[in-house]
Amino acid sequence: MSLETVVILAAGEGTRMKSQTPKVLHSIAGRSLLGHVLAAVQPLKASQVRVVVGSGREKVEAHLAEIAPSVTTVFQEHRGGTGHATQLALEGLAATGTILILAGDTPMLTDTSLAQLLKGHHEGGYTASVLTAEHPEPTGYGRIIRGDDGSLLRIVEERDADEIEKAIEEINSGVYAFDCQKLVGAIGKLRNDNSQGELYLTDVIEILRNEGGKIAAVCIDDFTETLGVNDRVQLAEAAALLRDRINDRLMRSGVTIVDPTTTWVDATSVISQDVTLLPGTAISGESTIGAGAVIGPRTTLIDCTVANGAEVKESYATSAVIGENASVGPFTYLRPGTNLAANTKAGAFVEMKNAVLGEGSKVPHLSYVGDATIGEGSNIGAATIFVNYDGVEKHHTIIGNHVRIGSDSMLVAPVTIGDGAYTAAGSVITDNVPAGAMGVGRARQRNVIGWVLRKRPGTKSAEAAASAPSNDQEG
Ligand code: UD1
Ligand code: MG
Image (cartoon, rainbow, N blue to C red; front, side):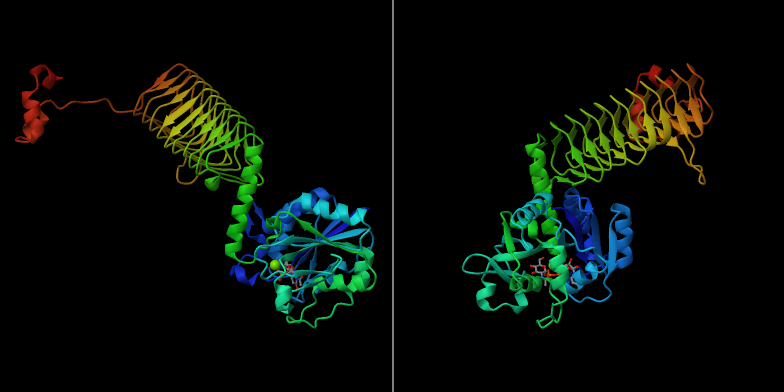
């Protein structure tokens, strides 16, 4: 049996988030809540995915166009309940095969559990299968009412439940597989005679059962998978649980994580074997970390590519490429377009942007490198500034191979320093320096002999100067 359709219900208002952003667009571990649900659904290879949108429709649709362009949306103008949302989603649908229905606010669900639900559903020839879990704090969820033989009779919502039903710990996850044709036949029979005056999708279970349908309740071991996010406290709880899940997976795949509680890796980032992540490290977006790299402590990498054996300490980098065995930090700020080749160094208090550092080149201390191409084996002395901005436009600096830039140089772009050239410390370089030349761009030093004794008599400096050997005074 094939999975024809997936419907994700995401039209709710998310009032408890108290946010201008629609609930399903809040993100944890590098994906929106809706993005996590889509990621869990994606491996199931459904023929089509429909998302019911309502509140914040434009924003949700724009987000979907970006992350899942093949998904179609269905508009629910007024909240009429999960049953109403499903009715709308079923309109104009070819009622064949299996349909999977789930909510857009359950980011912890895994494709494994969804596949397990579908497998049981197909193998048992069920009309409907509901994913359930034993929840230690079931308050707020729909409860699973089973008959004496253990079969699923119906689902009762918290607000409509009596005391005995409320004591049941098995909850409805809000994930269902249906025989689509049977669902289409039953969905019109829902009534809103409940405490919320809404059409509950959950009521369709009892309707199908009364019509002789075969109903399954599949209880999964890990209840955390079913957690729904309704407010920011639950958002943070889900984020922490996802962090732990990701860290567990990484550690089991051979990554050392010294302090898993302070290490945050997005679901979208890839960490290779034998990487060490030190405390306070966050790796996010489309980042990739190569084997044997050491990251942290207290390092943030966003959309970065770090090659094997590199080391990044106490640093912050966005859209940077860090080459094999490169060394970054401590306290280094790498902005988009930074590309460090193998065996390079970007050291303490260095900021780089849109800059290529060739193999073996070093920027060890206190420099700003913006809009530059630096060759191989070159050294940029401490406190060098690439003066890339004239107040209107940005300009590029080119530095050749095996160049030595003296400390405290200003390289005023556009400017080119040829292969093997040097610049004198403290230079302001405004003209190109040819290969092999020494560029000197500073005033010659002049000493005013005896100035302190004449101008600062009676000071400790004057005293020290007076007692220095006379040849030191003359210089
Ligand atoms: C629902 C279930 C409950 C289950 C719980 C699991 C019903 C009646 N109840 O309750 O049994 O334990 O999920 O998390 O189904 N939505 C729409 N349109 C609507 C109403 C809701 O699209 O008119 C969407 C929401 O955006 C949300 C999902 O459906 O993504 C579930 O709605 P929500 O209001 O969160 O239902 P719960 O009270 O959590
Ligand atoms: Mg909910």
